Image 1 (cartoon, rainbow, N blue to C red):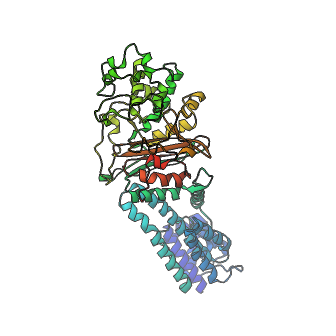
Image 2 (spheres, rainbow, N blue to C red):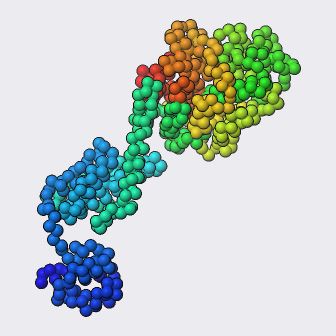
Image 3 (cartoon, helix red, strand yellow):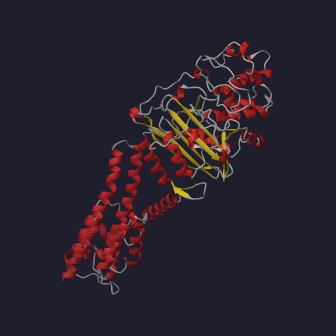
Length: 583
Protein backbone atom coordinates (compact mmCIF):
# COMPACT_ATOMS: atom_id res chain seq x y z
CA UNK A 1 0.00 0.00 0.00
CA UNK A 2 2.87 2.36 0.84
CA UNK A 3 4.35 1.70 -2.64
CA UNK A 4 0.98 2.50 -4.25
CA UNK A 5 0.77 5.79 -2.37
CA UNK A 6 4.32 6.66 -3.43
CA UNK A 7 3.48 6.05 -7.11
CA UNK A 8 0.25 8.02 -6.71
CA UNK A 9 2.00 11.04 -5.26
CA UNK A 10 4.76 10.94 -7.88
CA UNK A 11 2.34 10.63 -10.80
CA UNK A 12 0.12 13.49 -9.62
CA UNK A 13 3.18 15.68 -9.11
CA UNK A 14 4.78 14.88 -12.48
CA UNK A 15 1.49 15.18 -14.41
CA UNK A 16 0.67 18.57 -12.94
CA UNK A 17 4.30 19.67 -13.47
CA UNK A 18 3.76 19.05 -17.18
CA UNK A 19 0.39 20.82 -17.06
CA UNK A 20 -1.59 17.77 -18.23
CA UNK A 21 -5.07 16.63 -17.28
CA UNK A 22 -5.81 12.94 -16.72
CA UNK A 23 -7.61 12.83 -20.07
CA UNK A 24 -4.69 14.48 -21.91
CA UNK A 25 -2.25 12.01 -20.34
CA UNK A 26 -4.55 9.15 -21.37
CA UNK A 27 -4.57 10.34 -24.98
CA UNK A 28 -0.76 10.45 -25.08
CA UNK A 29 -0.17 7.09 -23.39
CA UNK A 30 -3.16 5.01 -24.55
CA UNK A 31 -3.65 4.18 -20.84
CA UNK A 32 -7.31 4.57 -19.92
CA UNK A 33 -8.44 7.51 -17.84
CA UNK A 34 -9.93 5.06 -15.33
CA UNK A 35 -6.54 3.36 -14.86
CA UNK A 36 -4.80 6.69 -14.34
CA UNK A 37 -7.46 7.68 -11.80
CA UNK A 38 -7.03 4.41 -9.87
CA UNK A 39 -3.23 4.78 -9.84
CA UNK A 40 -3.46 8.34 -8.53
CA UNK A 41 -5.89 7.23 -5.78
CA UNK A 42 -3.51 4.41 -4.76
CA UNK A 43 -6.15 1.78 -5.49
CA UNK A 44 -3.96 -0.35 -7.73
CA UNK A 45 -0.33 -1.23 -8.33
CA UNK A 46 0.32 -0.65 -12.06
CA UNK A 47 2.24 -3.03 -14.29
CA UNK A 48 5.80 -1.95 -15.06
CA UNK A 49 4.90 -1.55 -18.77
CA UNK A 50 2.13 0.91 -17.82
CA UNK A 51 4.57 2.90 -15.69
CA UNK A 52 7.05 2.98 -18.60
CA UNK A 53 4.37 4.33 -20.97
CA UNK A 54 3.44 7.08 -18.51
CA UNK A 55 7.12 7.98 -17.79
CA UNK A 56 7.86 8.22 -21.53
CA UNK A 57 4.86 10.51 -22.04
CA UNK A 58 5.97 12.72 -19.14
CA UNK A 59 9.61 12.69 -20.41
CA UNK A 60 10.99 11.44 -17.10
CA UNK A 61 12.84 8.37 -15.86
CA UNK A 62 10.82 5.38 -14.61
CA UNK A 63 12.42 5.62 -11.17
CA UNK A 64 10.97 9.12 -10.78
CA UNK A 65 7.55 7.41 -10.58
CA UNK A 66 8.40 4.10 -8.97
CA UNK A 67 11.59 3.16 -7.08
CA UNK A 68 13.34 0.31 -8.85
CA UNK A 69 15.71 -1.97 -7.04
CA UNK A 70 19.01 -2.29 -8.91
CA UNK A 71 20.86 -5.46 -7.89
CA UNK A 72 24.06 -3.94 -9.20
CA UNK A 73 23.71 -0.74 -7.17
CA UNK A 74 26.42 -0.54 -4.54
CA UNK A 75 26.02 0.97 -1.14
CA UNK A 76 27.22 4.56 -0.84
CA UNK A 77 30.94 4.72 -0.18
CA UNK A 78 31.93 8.12 1.16
CA UNK A 79 35.38 7.94 -0.41
CA UNK A 80 33.85 8.30 -3.90
CA UNK A 81 31.80 11.31 -2.87
CA UNK A 82 34.87 12.95 -1.35
CA UNK A 83 36.84 12.29 -4.55
CA UNK A 84 34.09 13.89 -6.65
CA UNK A 85 34.20 17.07 -4.57
CA UNK A 86 37.91 17.25 -3.69
CA UNK A 87 39.67 16.44 -6.99
CA UNK A 88 38.56 19.70 -8.70
CA UNK A 89 41.09 21.53 -6.51
CA UNK A 90 43.78 19.99 -8.76
CA UNK A 91 42.55 22.42 -11.41
CA UNK A 92 44.37 25.22 -9.61
CA UNK A 93 47.63 23.50 -10.55
CA UNK A 94 46.67 21.77 -13.80
CA UNK A 95 44.24 23.85 -15.90
CA UNK A 96 40.90 22.15 -16.70
CA UNK A 97 41.68 19.10 -14.55
CA UNK A 98 38.94 20.47 -12.26
CA UNK A 99 36.60 19.22 -15.02
CA UNK A 100 38.47 16.23 -16.45
CA UNK A 101 39.01 14.29 -13.19
CA UNK A 102 35.42 14.48 -11.84
CA UNK A 103 34.17 13.79 -15.38
CA UNK A 104 36.29 10.62 -15.51
CA UNK A 105 35.04 9.52 -12.07
CA UNK A 106 31.42 10.26 -13.01
CA UNK A 107 31.59 8.27 -16.25
CA UNK A 108 32.88 5.24 -14.35
CA UNK A 109 30.69 5.48 -11.23
CA UNK A 110 27.39 7.04 -12.33
CA UNK A 111 25.68 3.66 -12.90
CA UNK A 112 26.74 2.27 -9.53
CA UNK A 113 24.46 4.49 -7.47
CA UNK A 114 22.15 7.37 -8.30
CA UNK A 115 23.83 9.41 -5.55
CA UNK A 116 27.11 9.19 -7.45
CA UNK A 117 25.27 10.26 -10.57
CA UNK A 118 23.76 13.32 -8.89
CA UNK A 119 26.88 14.48 -7.05
CA UNK A 120 29.12 14.01 -10.10
CA UNK A 121 26.67 15.82 -12.35
CA UNK A 122 26.50 18.81 -10.01
CA UNK A 123 30.28 19.00 -9.59
CA UNK A 124 30.92 18.88 -13.35
CA UNK A 125 28.24 21.48 -14.11
CA UNK A 126 29.68 23.79 -11.48
CA UNK A 127 33.28 23.39 -12.64
CA UNK A 128 32.40 24.05 -16.29
CA UNK A 129 30.49 27.14 -15.15
CA UNK A 130 33.50 28.32 -13.13
CA UNK A 131 35.87 27.98 -16.10
CA UNK A 132 33.47 29.95 -18.31
CA UNK A 133 33.17 32.60 -15.59
CA UNK A 134 36.98 32.87 -15.36
CA UNK A 135 37.25 33.35 -19.13
CA UNK A 136 34.51 36.00 -19.14
CA UNK A 137 36.02 37.77 -16.13
CA UNK A 138 39.40 37.90 -17.86
CA UNK A 139 37.75 39.45 -20.91
CA UNK A 140 36.07 42.00 -18.64
CA UNK A 141 39.43 42.74 -17.00
CA UNK A 142 40.91 43.93 -20.29
CA UNK A 143 37.74 45.59 -21.64
CA UNK A 144 35.92 47.14 -18.66
CA UNK A 145 37.82 49.76 -16.69
CA UNK A 146 37.55 49.38 -12.90
CA UNK A 147 34.59 46.98 -12.55
CA UNK A 148 36.33 44.40 -14.73
CA UNK A 149 39.16 44.11 -12.22
CA UNK A 150 36.83 43.46 -9.26
CA UNK A 151 34.88 40.88 -11.26
CA UNK A 152 38.13 39.15 -12.20
CA UNK A 153 39.46 38.91 -8.64
CA UNK A 154 36.10 37.76 -7.19
CA UNK A 155 35.48 34.65 -9.32
CA UNK A 156 38.15 32.33 -7.91
CA UNK A 157 37.66 33.14 -4.20
CA UNK A 158 33.90 32.62 -4.54
CA UNK A 159 34.43 29.30 -6.34
CA UNK A 160 36.89 28.10 -3.66
CA UNK A 161 34.46 28.97 -0.85
CA UNK A 162 31.61 27.05 -2.53
CA UNK A 163 33.87 24.04 -3.18
CA UNK A 164 35.11 23.94 0.43
CA UNK A 165 31.58 24.22 1.86
CA UNK A 166 30.38 21.36 -0.34
CA UNK A 167 33.30 19.19 0.70
CA UNK A 168 32.32 19.78 4.34
CA UNK A 169 28.63 19.02 3.61
CA UNK A 170 29.58 15.77 1.87
CA UNK A 171 31.76 14.60 4.74
CA UNK A 172 29.08 15.37 7.34
CA UNK A 173 25.75 14.83 5.54
CA UNK A 174 26.37 13.26 2.10
CA UNK A 175 24.69 16.31 0.56
CA UNK A 176 25.86 19.02 -1.82
CA UNK A 177 24.62 22.30 -3.24
CA UNK A 178 26.32 24.23 -6.05
CA UNK A 179 24.62 27.56 -6.81
CA UNK A 180 25.00 29.46 -10.10
CA UNK A 181 25.68 26.24 -12.06
CA UNK A 182 24.62 25.98 -15.68
CA UNK A 183 22.96 22.53 -16.22
CA UNK A 184 25.19 21.22 -19.00
CA UNK A 185 24.51 17.68 -17.76
CA UNK A 186 20.81 17.16 -16.99
CA UNK A 187 19.11 14.76 -14.63
CA UNK A 188 18.66 12.37 -17.54
CA UNK A 189 21.39 9.78 -17.62
CA UNK A 190 23.16 11.11 -20.65
CA UNK A 191 25.52 13.94 -21.48
CA UNK A 192 23.82 16.60 -23.56
CA UNK A 193 25.26 17.77 -26.87
CA UNK A 194 25.63 21.17 -25.23
CA UNK A 195 27.88 19.74 -22.52
CA UNK A 196 30.00 17.82 -25.02
CA UNK A 197 30.47 20.96 -27.14
CA UNK A 198 31.50 23.03 -24.11
CA UNK A 199 33.99 20.40 -22.90
CA UNK A 200 35.54 20.14 -26.38
CA UNK A 201 35.86 23.94 -26.57
CA UNK A 202 37.50 24.07 -23.14
CA UNK A 203 39.94 21.33 -24.14
CA UNK A 204 40.78 23.37 -27.24
CA UNK A 205 41.30 26.49 -25.16
CA UNK A 206 43.57 24.58 -22.79
CA UNK A 207 45.78 23.18 -25.53
CA UNK A 208 45.87 26.51 -27.33
CA UNK A 209 46.83 28.29 -24.12
CA UNK A 210 49.59 25.91 -23.14
CA UNK A 211 51.00 26.04 -26.68
CA UNK A 212 51.59 29.79 -26.51
CA UNK A 213 55.33 29.69 -26.15
CA UNK A 214 57.99 31.92 -27.65
CA UNK A 215 61.24 30.39 -28.82
CA UNK A 216 64.24 32.55 -28.01
CA UNK A 217 67.62 32.82 -29.72
CA UNK A 218 69.16 29.97 -27.71
CA UNK A 219 66.07 27.77 -28.40
CA UNK A 220 64.86 28.13 -24.82
CA UNK A 221 61.22 29.14 -24.48
CA UNK A 222 59.14 31.60 -22.51
CA UNK A 223 55.37 31.56 -22.26
CA UNK A 224 53.39 34.56 -23.41
CA UNK A 225 51.79 34.77 -19.95
CA UNK A 226 55.20 35.01 -18.26
CA UNK A 227 56.38 37.59 -20.76
CA UNK A 228 53.24 39.70 -20.37
CA UNK A 229 53.60 39.70 -16.59
CA UNK A 230 57.26 40.75 -16.88
CA UNK A 231 56.42 43.59 -19.26
CA UNK A 232 53.67 44.89 -16.96
CA UNK A 233 55.96 44.64 -13.93
CA UNK A 234 58.78 46.58 -15.59
CA UNK A 235 56.42 49.21 -16.97
CA UNK A 236 54.98 49.76 -13.52
CA UNK A 237 58.34 49.93 -11.77
CA UNK A 238 59.96 52.19 -14.39
CA UNK A 239 56.87 54.40 -14.84
CA UNK A 240 56.29 53.64 -18.54
CA UNK A 241 52.67 54.49 -19.45
CA UNK A 242 52.36 52.55 -22.71
CA UNK A 243 54.22 49.95 -24.76
CA UNK A 244 53.61 48.15 -28.04
CA UNK A 245 55.44 44.83 -28.06
CA UNK A 246 55.99 42.17 -30.72
CA UNK A 247 58.11 39.01 -30.92
CA UNK A 248 58.90 37.36 -34.26
CA UNK A 249 59.64 33.64 -34.62
CA UNK A 250 60.28 31.86 -37.91
CA UNK A 251 59.64 35.07 -39.88
CA UNK A 252 56.14 35.30 -38.36
CA UNK A 253 54.54 37.08 -35.43
CA UNK A 254 54.72 34.86 -32.35
CA UNK A 255 53.35 37.40 -29.90
CA UNK A 256 52.07 40.95 -30.18
CA UNK A 257 50.24 43.09 -27.66
CA UNK A 258 49.67 46.71 -26.68
CA UNK A 259 50.13 47.42 -22.96
CA UNK A 260 49.10 50.40 -20.85
CA UNK A 261 47.89 53.79 -21.93
CA UNK A 262 48.22 56.04 -24.97
CA UNK A 263 47.38 59.05 -22.79
CA UNK A 264 48.39 58.57 -19.18
CA UNK A 265 46.66 61.70 -17.86
CA UNK A 266 43.23 60.26 -18.72
CA UNK A 267 44.11 56.52 -18.70
CA UNK A 268 43.13 56.05 -22.35
CA UNK A 269 44.08 52.55 -23.53
CA UNK A 270 46.85 51.96 -26.05
CA UNK A 271 45.90 49.46 -28.77
CA UNK A 272 47.63 47.92 -31.78
CA UNK A 273 45.71 50.38 -33.97
CA UNK A 274 46.59 53.51 -31.95
CA UNK A 275 48.63 56.04 -33.90
CA UNK A 276 52.15 56.37 -32.50
CA UNK A 277 55.01 58.63 -33.54
CA UNK A 278 57.73 56.47 -35.10
CA UNK A 279 60.69 58.86 -34.65
CA UNK A 280 63.85 57.31 -36.16
CA UNK A 281 62.10 54.05 -37.04
CA UNK A 282 61.38 56.25 -40.08
CA UNK A 283 64.95 55.60 -41.28
CA UNK A 284 64.40 51.85 -41.64
CA UNK A 285 61.45 52.49 -43.96
CA UNK A 286 63.52 55.06 -45.85
CA UNK A 287 66.20 52.45 -46.55
CA UNK A 288 63.65 50.40 -48.51
CA UNK A 289 62.42 53.46 -50.42
CA UNK A 290 65.98 54.41 -51.40
CA UNK A 291 66.91 50.91 -52.57
CA UNK A 292 63.72 50.67 -54.62
CA UNK A 293 64.67 53.89 -56.40
CA UNK A 294 68.15 52.46 -56.95
CA UNK A 295 66.51 49.41 -58.56
CA UNK A 296 64.48 51.80 -60.73
CA UNK A 297 67.73 53.56 -61.83
CA UNK A 298 66.67 56.89 -60.35
CA UNK A 299 70.01 57.13 -58.53
CA UNK A 300 73.17 55.16 -57.87
CA UNK A 301 74.45 54.64 -54.33
CA UNK A 302 77.96 55.91 -55.10
CA UNK A 303 77.35 58.90 -57.37
CA UNK A 304 77.65 62.29 -55.61
CA UNK A 305 74.12 63.58 -55.18
CA UNK A 306 74.98 67.12 -56.29
CA UNK A 307 75.95 65.78 -59.73
CA UNK A 308 72.33 64.77 -60.43
CA UNK A 309 71.09 68.36 -60.11
CA UNK A 310 71.20 70.99 -62.87
CA UNK A 311 72.20 73.64 -60.36
CA UNK A 312 73.75 73.87 -56.92
CA UNK A 313 71.58 72.62 -54.07
CA UNK A 314 71.84 75.97 -52.29
CA UNK A 315 70.47 77.77 -55.36
CA UNK A 316 67.03 76.15 -55.03
CA UNK A 317 64.39 78.20 -53.26
CA UNK A 318 63.14 76.34 -50.17
CA UNK A 319 59.65 74.84 -50.42
CA UNK A 320 59.45 73.49 -46.89
CA UNK A 321 59.53 75.36 -43.62
CA UNK A 322 63.26 74.77 -43.05
CA UNK A 323 64.62 71.35 -43.95
CA UNK A 324 65.28 72.03 -47.67
CA UNK A 325 67.01 75.38 -47.08
CA UNK A 326 70.64 74.74 -48.10
CA UNK A 327 71.78 78.35 -48.32
CA UNK A 328 74.34 77.61 -45.58
CA UNK A 329 76.21 75.30 -47.97
CA UNK A 330 77.17 78.04 -50.41
CA UNK A 331 80.53 78.37 -48.67
CA UNK A 332 80.92 74.65 -47.88
CA UNK A 333 83.69 72.83 -49.75
CA UNK A 334 82.76 69.23 -48.87
CA UNK A 335 79.03 68.66 -49.39
CA UNK A 336 79.41 68.01 -53.15
CA UNK A 337 81.22 64.70 -52.31
CA UNK A 338 78.26 63.22 -50.45
CA UNK A 339 76.63 60.10 -51.96
CA UNK A 340 73.41 58.22 -51.16
CA UNK A 341 75.45 55.45 -49.53
CA UNK A 342 77.06 57.97 -47.19
CA UNK A 343 73.69 59.44 -46.25
CA UNK A 344 72.22 56.03 -45.43
CA UNK A 345 75.30 54.81 -43.51
CA UNK A 346 75.66 58.02 -41.46
CA UNK A 347 79.01 58.95 -42.96
CA UNK A 348 77.88 62.08 -44.84
CA UNK A 349 79.64 64.35 -42.33
CA UNK A 350 76.50 66.35 -41.66
CA UNK A 351 75.49 66.80 -37.97
CA UNK A 352 72.40 65.07 -36.66
CA UNK A 353 70.32 68.25 -36.92
CA UNK A 354 71.40 71.80 -37.70
CA UNK A 355 69.37 73.19 -34.80
CA UNK A 356 71.62 71.29 -32.37
CA UNK A 357 74.60 73.36 -33.57
CA UNK A 358 75.60 76.41 -31.54
CA UNK A 359 74.95 78.77 -34.46
CA UNK A 360 72.01 76.72 -35.86
CA UNK A 361 73.77 76.56 -39.24
CA UNK A 362 74.19 73.52 -41.51
CA UNK A 363 77.70 72.46 -42.47
CA UNK A 364 79.67 69.29 -43.24
CA UNK A 365 81.65 68.62 -40.05
CA UNK A 366 84.07 65.97 -41.33
CA UNK A 367 85.31 64.44 -44.58
CA UNK A 368 82.34 62.59 -46.19
CA UNK A 369 82.72 58.81 -45.99
CA UNK A 370 85.49 58.90 -43.39
CA UNK A 371 83.75 57.78 -40.21
CA UNK A 372 80.40 57.29 -38.52
CA UNK A 373 78.52 60.42 -37.44
CA UNK A 374 74.78 59.90 -36.88
CA UNK A 375 72.94 62.34 -39.10
CA UNK A 376 69.29 63.01 -39.77
CA UNK A 377 70.37 65.92 -41.98
CA UNK A 378 72.23 63.54 -44.29
CA UNK A 379 69.05 61.56 -44.96
CA UNK A 380 66.99 64.72 -45.46
CA UNK A 381 69.54 65.86 -48.05
CA UNK A 382 69.08 62.56 -49.91
CA UNK A 383 65.28 62.91 -49.61
CA UNK A 384 65.32 66.40 -51.13
CA UNK A 385 67.44 65.25 -54.07
CA UNK A 386 65.09 62.30 -54.68
CA UNK A 387 62.06 64.58 -54.64
CA UNK A 388 63.68 66.80 -57.27
CA UNK A 389 64.69 63.85 -59.47
CA UNK A 390 61.31 62.08 -59.33
CA UNK A 391 59.19 65.25 -59.19
CA UNK A 392 57.21 63.50 -56.46
CA UNK A 393 56.77 64.43 -52.82
CA UNK A 394 58.44 62.13 -50.33
CA UNK A 395 55.00 61.13 -48.96
CA UNK A 396 53.97 60.01 -52.46
CA UNK A 397 57.12 57.90 -52.79
CA UNK A 398 56.58 56.30 -49.38
CA UNK A 399 52.98 55.45 -50.16
CA UNK A 400 53.78 53.95 -53.57
CA UNK A 401 56.84 51.93 -52.58
CA UNK A 402 56.07 50.77 -49.01
CA UNK A 403 52.75 51.69 -47.43
CA UNK A 404 50.37 50.69 -50.23
CA UNK A 405 52.03 47.35 -51.16
CA UNK A 406 52.16 46.30 -47.49
CA UNK A 407 48.67 47.65 -46.75
CA UNK A 408 50.06 49.90 -44.04
CA UNK A 409 46.88 51.93 -44.26
CA UNK A 410 47.46 53.85 -41.03
CA UNK A 411 51.01 55.01 -41.79
CA UNK A 412 52.26 58.29 -43.18
CA UNK A 413 55.21 60.66 -42.95
CA UNK A 414 52.84 63.48 -42.07
CA UNK A 415 50.02 63.97 -39.61
CA UNK A 416 46.51 63.21 -40.88
CA UNK A 417 43.14 64.11 -39.40
CA UNK A 418 42.15 60.43 -39.40
CA UNK A 419 44.75 59.83 -36.66
CA UNK A 420 43.00 62.28 -34.33
CA UNK A 421 40.55 59.92 -32.52
CA UNK A 422 43.19 57.44 -31.35
CA UNK A 423 46.78 58.65 -31.00
CA UNK A 424 49.47 58.19 -28.38
CA UNK A 425 50.99 61.09 -26.48
CA UNK A 426 54.64 61.12 -25.53
CA UNK A 427 55.29 61.31 -21.77
CA UNK A 428 58.07 62.74 -19.64
CA UNK A 429 59.91 61.03 -16.77
CA UNK A 430 57.05 61.82 -14.38
CA UNK A 431 54.47 60.26 -16.69
CA UNK A 432 52.94 63.56 -17.77
CA UNK A 433 52.01 63.96 -21.43
CA UNK A 434 53.76 66.26 -23.89
CA UNK A 435 51.72 68.27 -26.37
CA UNK A 436 51.43 66.27 -29.60
CA UNK A 437 53.41 67.76 -32.51
CA UNK A 438 51.07 67.72 -35.52
CA UNK A 439 52.82 70.30 -37.72
CA UNK A 440 55.76 68.25 -38.99
CA UNK A 441 56.42 68.27 -42.71
CA UNK A 442 57.40 64.87 -44.18
CA UNK A 443 61.04 64.13 -43.38
CA UNK A 444 62.51 60.74 -44.28
CA UNK A 445 64.53 60.14 -41.09
CA UNK A 446 62.07 61.28 -38.45
CA UNK A 447 58.37 61.98 -39.06
CA UNK A 448 56.80 58.55 -39.50
CA UNK A 449 53.33 58.21 -37.99
CA UNK A 450 52.32 54.55 -37.71
CA UNK A 451 50.68 51.87 -35.54
CA UNK A 452 51.86 48.63 -34.00
CA UNK A 453 49.81 46.69 -36.52
CA UNK A 454 51.35 48.58 -39.46
CA UNK A 455 54.96 48.49 -38.30
CA UNK A 456 54.62 44.76 -37.66
CA UNK A 457 53.74 44.44 -41.35
CA UNK A 458 56.89 46.34 -42.27
CA UNK A 459 59.19 44.20 -40.11
CA UNK A 460 57.57 41.05 -41.47
CA UNK A 461 58.34 42.32 -44.97
CA UNK A 462 61.96 42.88 -43.92
CA UNK A 463 62.28 39.37 -42.46
CA UNK A 464 60.67 37.84 -45.54
CA UNK A 465 62.62 40.07 -47.97
CA UNK A 466 59.60 41.54 -49.69
CA UNK A 467 59.37 44.61 -51.98
CA UNK A 468 63.08 44.55 -52.93
CA UNK A 469 65.31 42.09 -54.76
CA UNK A 470 67.63 39.82 -52.80
CA UNK A 471 70.62 41.88 -53.98
CA UNK A 472 69.06 45.06 -52.59
CA UNK A 473 68.43 43.46 -49.21
CA UNK A 474 72.01 42.20 -49.16
CA UNK A 475 73.18 45.75 -49.85
CA UNK A 476 71.13 47.17 -46.99
CA UNK A 477 72.45 44.57 -44.57
CA UNK A 478 76.11 44.76 -45.52
CA UNK A 479 78.25 46.60 -42.92
CA UNK A 480 79.35 49.93 -44.40
CA UNK A 481 81.28 51.46 -41.51
CA UNK A 482 82.58 50.20 -38.14
CA UNK A 483 81.51 52.11 -35.05
CA UNK A 484 84.17 52.53 -32.38
CA UNK A 485 82.66 55.18 -30.14
CA UNK A 486 81.45 54.77 -26.54
CA UNK A 487 77.97 56.17 -27.12
CA UNK A 488 75.64 56.89 -29.98
CA UNK A 489 74.78 60.36 -28.65
CA UNK A 490 75.98 62.76 -26.00
CA UNK A 491 79.44 63.70 -24.74
CA UNK A 492 80.86 60.17 -25.28
CA UNK A 493 79.71 59.98 -28.90
CA UNK A 494 83.23 60.87 -30.18
CA UNK A 495 85.24 59.01 -27.53
CA UNK A 496 86.96 56.02 -29.12
CA UNK A 497 86.64 52.60 -27.48
CA UNK A 498 87.11 48.92 -28.25
CA UNK A 499 84.13 47.85 -26.10
CA UNK A 500 82.06 46.71 -29.07
CA UNK A 501 84.80 45.17 -31.18
CA UNK A 502 83.70 41.63 -30.26
CA UNK A 503 80.30 42.21 -31.89
CA UNK A 504 81.77 44.31 -34.75
CA UNK A 505 79.26 47.10 -34.18
CA UNK A 506 78.63 48.71 -37.58
CA UNK A 507 76.14 50.55 -39.72
CA UNK A 508 74.55 49.23 -42.88
CA UNK A 509 72.19 51.29 -45.04
CA UNK A 510 69.69 52.82 -42.65
CA UNK A 511 70.14 50.06 -40.05
CA UNK A 512 72.66 49.42 -37.30
CA UNK A 513 74.31 45.99 -37.27
CA UNK A 514 76.22 43.73 -34.88
CA UNK A 515 77.55 40.20 -35.02
CA UNK A 516 76.23 37.38 -32.80
CA UNK A 517 76.52 33.57 -32.62
CA UNK A 518 73.22 33.60 -34.51
CA UNK A 519 74.47 35.67 -37.42
CA UNK A 520 74.31 39.39 -38.05
CA UNK A 521 71.63 41.29 -36.14
CA UNK A 522 70.09 44.43 -37.64
CA UNK A 523 68.50 47.08 -35.47
CA UNK A 524 66.78 50.44 -35.56
CA UNK A 525 65.69 52.63 -32.70
CA UNK A 526 63.68 55.80 -32.30
CA UNK A 527 63.77 58.62 -29.80
CA UNK A 528 62.07 61.98 -29.38
CA UNK A 529 59.15 63.96 -27.95
CA UNK A 530 58.53 61.47 -25.15
CA UNK A 531 58.79 58.36 -27.32
CA UNK A 532 61.45 55.62 -27.28
CA UNK A 533 61.45 52.62 -29.59
CA UNK A 534 63.74 49.70 -30.31
CA UNK A 535 63.65 46.97 -32.93
CA UNK A 536 66.19 44.27 -33.63
CA UNK A 537 65.97 41.39 -36.12
CA UNK A 538 68.08 38.27 -36.47
CA UNK A 539 67.41 37.46 -40.15
CA UNK A 540 69.28 34.14 -40.19
CA UNK A 541 67.01 32.80 -37.41
CA UNK A 542 63.76 34.50 -38.40
CA UNK A 543 63.53 36.00 -34.91
CA UNK A 544 63.17 39.57 -33.77
CA UNK A 545 61.58 42.03 -31.37
CA UNK A 546 59.79 45.37 -31.59
CA UNK A 547 59.22 47.72 -28.66
CA UNK A 548 57.41 51.01 -29.26
CA UNK A 549 56.78 53.15 -26.20
CA UNK A 550 55.45 56.59 -25.32
CA UNK A 551 57.79 57.37 -22.45
CA UNK A 552 61.14 58.99 -21.77
CA UNK A 553 61.78 56.17 -19.23
CA UNK A 554 61.58 53.21 -21.61
CA UNK A 555 65.29 52.92 -22.31
CA UNK A 556 65.65 51.79 -18.70
CA UNK A 557 63.76 48.53 -19.33
CA UNK A 558 64.89 47.69 -22.89
CA UNK A 559 68.00 45.77 -21.82
CA UNK A 560 66.08 43.45 -19.50
CA UNK A 561 63.26 42.92 -21.98
CA UNK A 562 65.70 42.02 -24.76
CA UNK A 563 67.27 39.41 -22.49
CA UNK A 564 64.02 38.02 -21.07
CA UNK A 565 61.99 37.94 -24.29
CA UNK A 566 64.66 36.91 -26.79
CA UNK A 567 67.82 36.01 -24.84
CA UNK A 568 69.47 38.88 -26.71
CA UNK A 569 72.57 39.56 -24.62
CA UNK A 570 74.45 41.09 -27.56
CA UNK A 571 72.71 44.42 -28.19
CA UNK A 572 75.24 47.15 -27.24
CA UNK A 573 73.08 48.59 -24.48
CA UNK A 574 75.73 50.93 -23.09
CA UNK A 575 76.29 52.43 -26.54
CA UNK A 576 72.50 52.80 -26.82
CA UNK A 577 72.42 54.36 -23.32
CA UNK A 578 69.87 51.76 -22.17
CA UNK A 579 70.90 52.14 -18.54
CA UNK A 580 68.61 49.94 -16.38
CA UNK A 581 66.04 51.97 -14.45
CA UNK A 582 67.05 50.35 -11.15
CA UNK A 583 70.80 50.78 -11.65
